[in-house]
Image 1 (cartoon, rainbow, N blue to C red):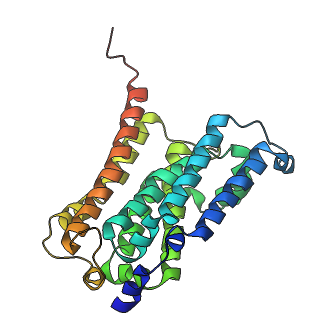
Image 2 (cartoon, rainbow, N blue to C red; image 1 turned 30 degrees about the horizontal axis):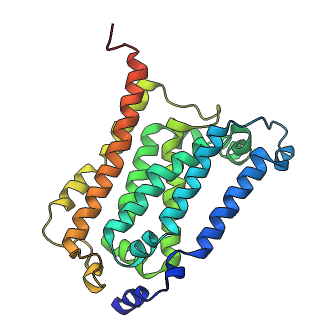
Image 3 (cartoon, one colour; image 1 turned 120 degrees about the horizontal axis):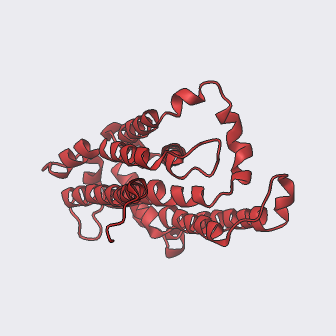
Length: 268
């Protein structure tokens, strides 16, 4: 186990930048532009002009995708640093996903999501409380020490984990940034409650691990230490990244939603 992870440190600079992920990112951006601003629009009967700002948001999401999974951050996250792993999760769930969603025009995503919306059980699972609970329960499950260890030891399982996180992040963000009229966004006041509930479910676990004096993930005791971080310092830094990375965006969105709901100027 330790040797498998330790051997991963010996990679070239080219490998550390993950050329396959770079190629996938470029292909995704080109396919998107082809469909929303190029000849590909003819394949969609309801296609309409897409604002440049929407396209920019999607392309930012693609850049964040490459940063999280194609830059050296991904190598650190996969093999050495819990803090890098947590930063990767924050970039995927809190930054990349909403940028990608808000960059999709409704006519492009409707053919993909309509079958799900018309499924008879959709209304039951699409309730805000179910969305928030499902995301947080699955997120905690993947961070239990035995499961977490398997993700570091088996690249295929790590890939499955991130696919699940992305799909659940889409599920979580839809009531806030849905591009489809069929999936209605929550009213501003409900968004405040939803964000507060979703963002605080993990707080007890974060606070507990933040102040523990023993490593929660023993696997990091067997990998080379990088960037001068001890196992415990790395664990605490990772939890701070998670705490700040979730609270700051959620707080900002909550304040914005509340301001729209309140609709009262602070200045006369």
